[in-house]
Image 1: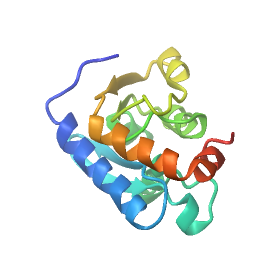
Image 2: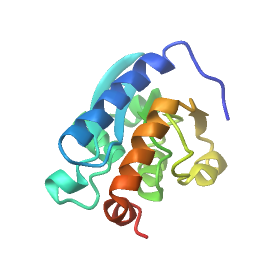
Image 3: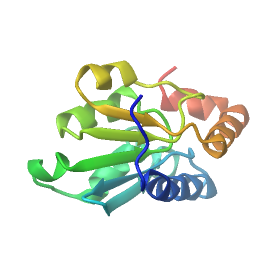
Length: 152
C-alpha cells in the first residue's frame, strides 16, 4: 500500500458523506469522489437499489457525474471510494488511467486490488473503522442486497 497524503482524510469525508446519503435513501452505503489537482470534480454514491440500475456503483455514479473529461485530466486525478473497488469499477479506473485510488477500507470486501496494482495504480487504504462499521452493519442487515451487488 502507498502512503497517505495530506488531504486524503478531507476527501474521504466527502466520499463517506456520499455513502451515508445512499444509506439514508435505502441504498448500499458506498460513496466516492473524484479529485483533480486538489479540487473535487464530482461525487457519487451507490444507487443500484434507488435507480434499479445494476451498474450504478458509487464509483461509476461519481465518474458519470464528472462528465466527459480529457484524458490528461484523468492522469492528474485520484478516486476516493469508501470500499475496495470491484472489478467493474476497477476496470473504469484502468480505462481512464486514473493513477491513484484511495479507499476507506477493504475489511468487508476486497475488490480487484491486485489487478489495479499490476496495472500501476497507486492504492491507499485508510482502514477507517467508521467505514467498516457502516458496511458491516449493512451487509448483516441486507445480505441479499449486498450479495446481488457483488454478484454472489
